[in-house]
Length: 365
Ligand code: DAH
Image (cartoon, rainbow, N blue to C red):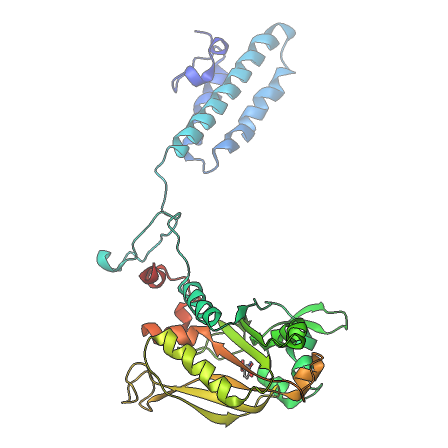
């Protein structure tokens, strides 16, 4: 059979070439093909190029046949590449959730699921629960920004330029700047939204309605990491402004929320604190939902858990949003979602949330 008469895809590993030189190169290249990582490289073989180069040097009567055979060899090699690719395609699919540690006993390895069986992250599930409870209390939900400017992070919140309290919120800046030439910021808290929510709600106040918003968002901190501290986490801010609003309303709102969230009666207590954007400012603690104040390792045997910062919105913050602090007062808080969820499920390490560990996440599906 003449090699060029048959398409190489239909041939077996052995094609006959009349020219002994081509036969020799064909054998050499087929052996090399078996070893090659990148199979397509066989077409770049120097021996094949040399055969093409040789065509010009032959007497005109031999050129035709030699050229046909060199082309047939090239086609045969291309056929090998094509059939190799088809075989590779037919291999069984790999589970993208691998690899697991081969030394871990089979029953302790994560269940390998097809990648399309994803599920909601537990923090997002719990965030819906939180937002739904506040919706039942009349709070609208507004999402916070993941990148913000100096004005919303500091200026609008009564942190004057150079104020030492800015250091407590020392966070991540970008090299990109805002209109005033100040770096953009990955915010350390959701309080960055207060000014926006207050400005947007001014009309409501004038119509005799309160401003009531819950503002979830992702926040970023320059933290030393441990089981209780993570650089990236979620907060939900609360803002409520109206006529005659006082700290009793703040405490009642948060206590009602926490009891609903944990599904049981709880006590709350406040202790004085300092935030530039509230006056007075408090830290709110709740009785440990695990041990009911008897003392356990969740509450470090104190019976109480310090949960969140809150206070009465500072008059300067209201003024900055165009609201008259002599007419209206309000309260605000900022609560870490991760911590709340840790306690609900007895999770021992906050870092699990951002870890993408499947065996952790699948407990919540
Ligand atoms: N933004 C504060 C923090 O992350 C928490 C906070 C305290 C928020 C008091 C408030 C507030 O709205 O009134 O540390």
